Length: 219
Image 1 (spheres, rainbow, N blue to C red):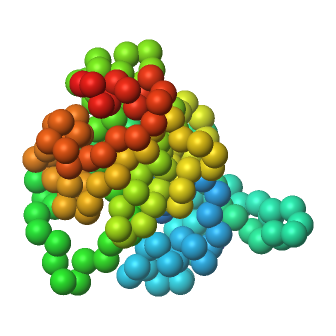
Image 2: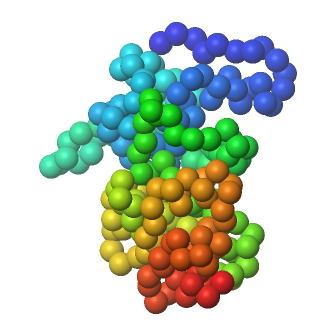
């Protein structure tokens, strides 16, 4: 394994970029925020990354204590990568970067890949926003299933440990189910529309009887 490159600057921002500033590293973190992932799954959901670069970044992340690799018990018996606690602490960094980049999103280009679960972090920002938190109060945490034409995913709102989202329908009965289209998701991701305003405008259908679902409908 090659030695990690460094800016050789006695600055915490520079030290952080020593660990996560390489191309693809933060996007790998984005994928691993969904929980343990196989190498093949990571490669499929990171279109454009070469196998050599992905393998190299994962090794770097293991070395730097951001991710670990382990073998699943039978019958799976596959190797998976997952974030360490320190790797999971990059969630607010990614959220801040996503918020800063809202104005950069613009129109989707013909060459732009899209995965439904890439909307997970913008929707989590919406659900964790001040207005949404005020509306939901103590009922603001829970499991939320999101249904899009492009695919389903689920969110762990208020999660302090473990995955913050996952692909596919929620495991078990969700506290709330959101049904919306990609245009609405894009408007929320671009900062043009708040999640609660989308609910009020009828662009997001909210189902469920939990305090969280009721708070979203009644906000």
